[in-house]
Length: 234
Image 1 (cartoon, one colour):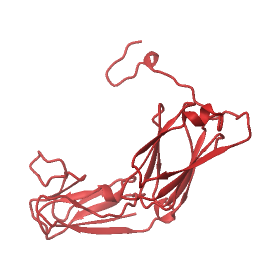
Image 2 (cartoon, rainbow, N blue to C red; image 1 turned 30 degrees about the vertical axis):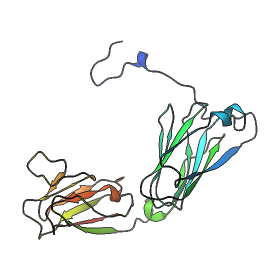
Image 3 (tube, helix red, strand yellow; image 1 turned 45 degrees about the horizontal axis):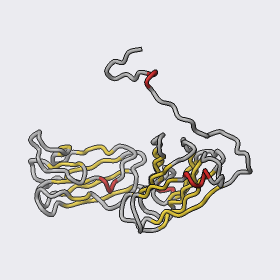
Image 4 (tube, one colour; image 1 turned 135 degrees about the vertical axis):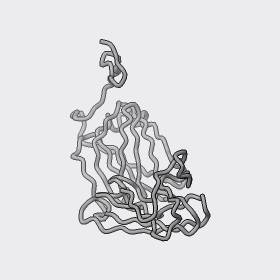
C-alpha cells in the first residue's frame, strides 16, 4: 500500500500493548500521590518501579483532584500521548490509554503553586468530571470582562479569569477605539493591521466570536493606548 499526501499508510503504523479493560489478578487497587506545583511545573514521573514491584500491576484509570486549583490541569501519558485536561476547580475519573510502564507529565496553566492529589487505578472507570458547575457546562454563568490598552502596541491580557468558555462568546471593540482597528490573539499579538500582523483584526464596533473550549486568560488584545475591548459569553 502506498501513501499519498494527507493519508496514512496503515502498514507503517506501530501498535502498542495497553491494559484498559483488563481484569487485575489482585483486588482493585490504587496508588495515591500529590503533585506539588510549587516544586516544578511541569513534572514528569516514571511509574515503572510501581509496576515492576507489583504494587499496582497496571494502570487503567486515573483520578485527579483539581478542585483547589483555579487553573486547568493537564496529564499527558507517555507513548499513547493521551492528553487529559481537567477544568479549573474540578475532579475527574478518566480512562487511561497506557503502556505497562507509563511516564506521565503533569502541568498546570496559571500561577497556582498548591498541591493536586492524583491516584492511579488498576481497574476501569466510567469517565466523569465533577466540580464547579460554573465551569462544567451546567447552568453556565454569564461571563463578562473589559480591558484597556495601556501602551500603544503592547499586548494586554483580556482578563486573568481562567474560565473555559463552554457555549461561546464575543469580543467587541469599543466604539471610541482607534479607527485603524485593534487585534486579538495570544500573548505576543501585535497591533499590525496591514496583513502582516499575527492577530485577528477587530475594527470599531465589530465583534469576534470566541469558540467553546477557549480559556479566557489565554486571550490578549492590542491596539492604540486607550482602546477598549470587552467580552461576553458563557
